Each structure stands twice: as structure tokens, then as C-alpha cells.
Length: 346
Image (spheres, one colour):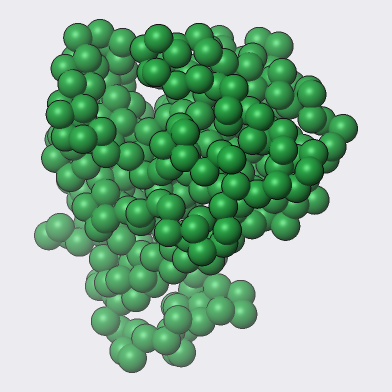
């Protein structure tokens, strides 16, 4: 028996063993980590039970077998038994609530001091969810979002920035003077929940946690206008009209159709990325490199996969490797899960 790493919405150290590619976790350890328990009626957490015809099909050697357990829960999974790491994605129906139901999926992420915050903390306010990263020039846009936050703070509005980064220390140099919440997403949970494939991506969420304008590229300043061809003004003005006058740029039906869901491969890419990042934290560079490469093959034009991996593997995310990737992305038609910078702003 040994310590294994199980990743879902968080990273857990659990007792168990690996055997012939199987990832077997002690039932008590699994319950403690995830809240799910195996009972006669199936897998249960609180008042919720997922029926399982034969609970014994989820076990091996007296422990829970993560592959069939994840399948029973409707959650994709990537397992590296040699590295002792398994990553489970969120349930498909939870992920799709953002697109199909325009319900902003809840999340719990730490701030730079390690305090965990959930989306519900800001219920009753209009929220601009801004994703950025230390590996993106958009890190310089945070003061621009601060100006908007300050301007509209008395109107029950807040910016919430989420860094798609490996650690708080990666983010800390860029947040001097920033007073709105800044959270860190080391396991790229938000990119799965909201189908985010690049940063900066901005989501408008109303007082009742309903998505008003789904994923869209937007900037808090014109610092990179010459490179991106995008002016910040039209988006910032549209946010002001929404906050001050209640003017929504899209109908519900238009918002539901605006952003394509992640493909199965793109979901798996995120899980391979999580396994890779955790392997790197555990000092297993060979496993990390293998899973980063698999993630890149599954989602070849996803910046949250390709560019985010560059600094983790010692490559410069602002260097030639990035510009080569950027040219490939443009040649592929600049694929992006979201609205363009100019759409749905009137």
C-alpha cells in the first residue's frame, strides 16, 4: 500500500495501490477525499446516490477501482498508474450547464494567500469573470480591469480575476495595487467548467449567477492593440451599459448558441495536463513531459494547454516556440471557444 494522488476539483493524497494499470483507492480514503461512499444502492454523497447495478464491479482487491468509479459517476478520467496519479474531470452535465442552461458553474479556488473562495460569495453582484495568466501579455491588463472595477463598485459590480497558473507565486508579481479578487487555478478547473481555450477570456455573470454574455476575448486596456487588433473600449462600454442600465447584449437563446462545448479530446487534454503538472510537482519530469505531449496532441490549438505548458517545461512562453505555435494557430483559422472581441456588444 502506498500514497497515491487523486485529482478532482482539488488534489488529494490517498492510500491505495496500483496493479496492472489499475488505480485502486481505499474506500475510506476515497470517501474522505471526495465525499463519495460506496453503498448497497450505489455511489452516494449526501442525499445524492448514483445507482450501480453491481457495486462489486467498482472494486478490486477490496479497494475502489478509479476507472469504473469515474465511469459510474459520468466523469472522464486519466490514470498514470506508474506515476501514481489519477485525474477525474467534472461530470458532463455539470460542465454543460454553462452552455445549455446559462447557469454559471460554481467553483472553489484559492486566492494568493491560500484562502478558498466560491462563486456564490459574490451572489447579488454583477460579476466580470476575467481569466488571465502569467504566461500571457494580458497580465499587464489587470490595472485596466481595476479602473473598471473602481468605476462601477458602487453599482453592485465586481471583477473576479482567475489566473490559469501553476502557483500563487507565478501570479504575485502582477497584482500589485489590485484590490478585486484574484484567484489561482493550478488544475485548470475553470477551463473545463466554462470551456475556456485561451486567455484573456471574459464571462459576464449576473446577480443570480446566470451567464449573460458567455466566453469572449476582451482586454482591460489598449496596451496590445497593435498586436491583437482589438480595442478595449467597445467591450468596456458594453459592460457599463449592462451594469448601469441593465442592457444585455444577447438574448438567452443567442447566448446558449454562442460558445461550442469542449470536445471529448479537449476534456481529456485538460486531464492529461493536470496529471502532467502534478507529476512535475512530484519530481517526475518524464511523466510530466509524456502527459504534456499527449495533451498537446489532443488539443493542438488550445493556449491553456500548449502555451501554459511552456514555462512548466522550461520554455519561454514569449519566445520563438510561442510564435511558431501562434502562426500554426492562425493558419488553422484561430480556433477559440468564445465570442470574438467585436461580437455581441451593441
